[in-house]
Image 1 (tube, rainbow, N blue to C red):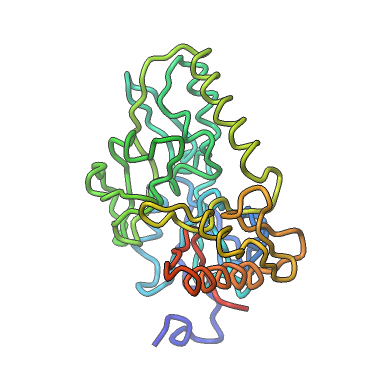
Image 2 (image 1 turned 180 degrees about the vertical axis):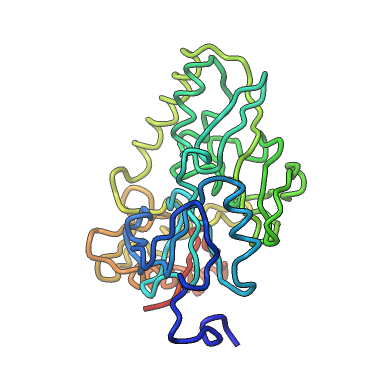
Length: 309
């Protein structure tokens, strides 16, 4: 029996959650936290104050409470029925702090990838330029092994601090995450709270030039200022998802306000009126059509969560 069926109807979720120093936000709209701009509410959003607060929550929460961690929301589709249980968002200053220790940069998981730009330029270091160009947050970059321009997070990750389901804080080496193409293999209940990244000495002008090249490439080849979640499907081994979509004319599909970008057909766009269902239906139509025409099954790269409305 699910957590929700077991819970007494007269008691709301807030009444059975542990006391915290952070913030609880009941019925929090999720559409303002995702790049698609769609989706129903989180039953409760929890913003922990720091690692101690988060550990306390994990130790004392109901044992079968559904918990989901949201990062920058750039690679996420929240369904229209919202997310049951608790959504954890690492927004407080503690999770956005950083420290430079020689050739190691220790960053909070709540930091946005784009914030690395100023750190690198101000401290004459490089090696993380590819991360700056990826929308979203550092915590999510670990779970998806984010990468582009020939580099992936696994190339620069040394270790990460995590809080597990029992509320224990642990230091985990990069190898233990088993990072591979756009995925990792570690327990879903692990919450990454900080990470240590390899950097290298590099003058600011060189770093700036590399980041400008990356930015110009994205502006030229990918949709800009659009409600999108980036690459929708993973590239099958040895193939390109966008080529399969174009070859099968799946790029011509539309579902209400959801359509395929005319700039890069592995990007789905919310033109303004789409629901999460529209976007997911469009993606599933593309998967089915590519399979029918080529016998190749595209795998979603965008993470879909929540209850269908």
